[in-house]
Amino acid sequence: MSDSKPAMNTADGGPDSKPDPEGAGGDGGASSEQVNIKVRDSEGNEVQFRIKKKTQLKKLMDAYCGRMGTSVGTYRFLFDGNRINDTDTPESLEMEDMDVIDAVLFQQGGIECSPLFLFAPVSCRC
Image 1 (cartoon, one colour):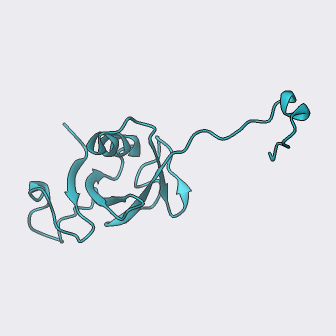
Image 2 (cartoon, rainbow, N blue to C red):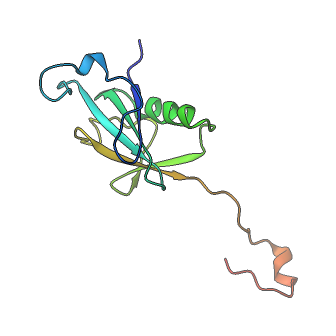
């Protein structure tokens, strides 16, 4: 029933889980309907997913956040430097087997300029 099957990999490439039975035999494990995608964080840790090419990447991103023990929205996901939208699919982004998605921690905060800052002794640098 699930379209993605996560398999944890460390930065050195050693798998922590059993290989996906759907990938056994044939052309290196990937069928023409599925693609293996790696999600890499800023520390170089990778999680590998097998996902159907027509499955929305929201499912992969949710699974990654669940695997990391974080809430959805903690990370922003980038492919080739562009942010991935929930409705994007590997097919729509022309992803190939073993492509890498970057998981970047989403940072909130900062300062917003408001009329009160106009009278403050420190200038607002917006």
